[in-house]
Length: 76
Image (tube, rainbow, N blue to C red):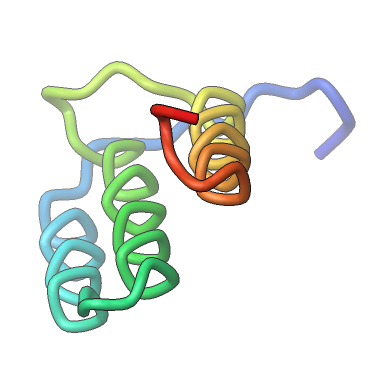
């Protein structure tokens, strides 16, 4: 694979279910656990045929989540 080559993520309901199950198990009260669960959910969207996303979009979304958390929330 070369830089800039697009990856194709074929629909895979079993992978979606597995990633989301792990996310549900990880999710807890701490912000770190919630963040990790959210990242897994977003990653599962790559394999969900009803979602339209890309790895680049997920990375941008994760960066935004981490920046907002670092600032203390959306209201600050």
